Length: 84
Length: 273
Image (cartoon, rainbow over all chains, first blue to last red; front, side):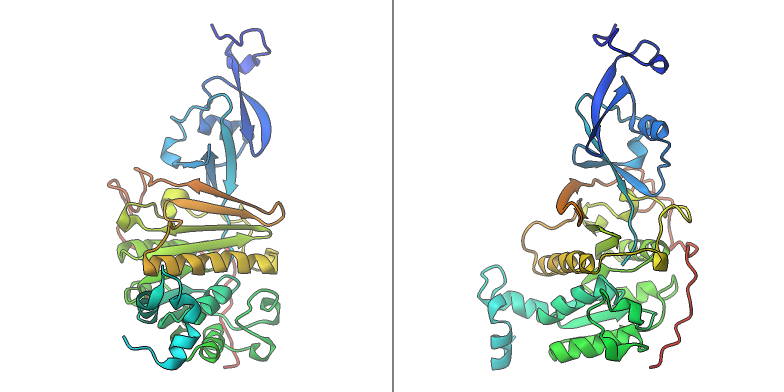
């Protein structure tokens, strides 16, 4: 049982707890075990055209599905720019 | 290498830096740098590298100077409107520093010519304005084992990094595996950009080029520098090689240059000269 049980776990979390992350400078709660890919799905952001920065390190696209977000993680969605 | 008296005076502020010295300055004068795009990023990068005495500079651009370029493309001026950008840049560089030999490429780079063109240079700078060209340059640099200093910008945002997979660092595809789908990321003429932002990003590329040529300091290889002009923040983040990278990993599937479709209409350049 999560220690966050009863602190407003969302229905989709199936009784899971939540972790607080900083997403592009703003606090956001996600359910336990949310991966980078899960977060992008939740935000309805397609992985093309962006990079995901986790605690000042870019997460390789091949690791999106295995990188689990932890409490107090700092996540930035970096948009690709191509102008010169 | 023997400097002329004029060269000793011209490069004196470099030569007195212990990290550069006469040896480093001589190295710059014997260096060859290729700059893709004589636009917003290429303009300041070319000017500073020319001023620094980089001995040979390749300038590639298929466009001609347009009045709307002059808000940021400071290597060109009003009298150059209508000229090929590569030739206009050459004139400015030669006026700034006669030590620099300029090689111009007025043709658009493509899968057939890019590798032959870049293989003669020590360091490459990407200041191009579209994704297909950026991927072409990245892939060609990988196959030719050349260090690629990449700058890009949009509105108030800039990004700079160095791709150096031949030295264990990531390539463009480790960071962004594929070009964005058409329409997702605005580019080309429809995008506004703060003129002075081009100076910030292009000059950082020039700084990194000099450091790479002289092997001094810590460069942006393995890092992405993200600049937000409105917030006036710089963030430096780590980038690792993607072990699944389609280009530079052991599992690579890309074995030759890939040609992507242009998201924007490319108008054939009809320059006055």
